[in-house]
Amino acid sequence: MYRKFIGKRSQKVKNVVERGLVKRFAESIGDPHPVYTDEEFGKQSRYGRYIAPPTYPRVLDYGVVEGLILPKKGLIHGEQIYHYERPLFVGEELFCYTEVVDYYEKTGRNGLMGFLAVKKFGEDLQGKVIFTEESKTIITESVRKAMKI
Image (cartoon, rainbow, N blue to C red; front, side, top):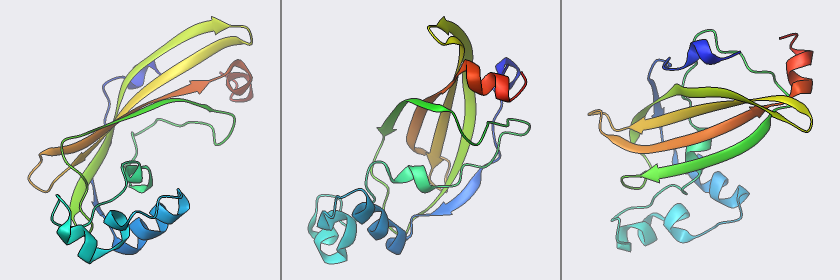
């Protein structure tokens, strides 16, 4: 179903870690720690400035892998892992992109399920990786039938 996309990448997209969005994101996840919301507290922290919460990359733009179309509903979030080389600093610019790393299928109780593994990258302006996000999306038999695949 999606095997032909393995190894394909999106174009890099420039993003900014915006102060207001970081604050709203921290509030929305229920983590109002001042290292995410207070510039002065951030300056006194071990990072020397304030940072974004670890799951903040969910709101960044990673571009589109050409031709890869997923249904808008009915998917199952299977797994998500972040790896950081350093925190994301509020106000910094970075480039983000997506790569399809694997697709496989398994038969379960509810029929054939597809597992789409994607890796997302965030790099500084010099091309050094700041973080990666690995995720798996499960495509159930009912979603596959609705897609007529």
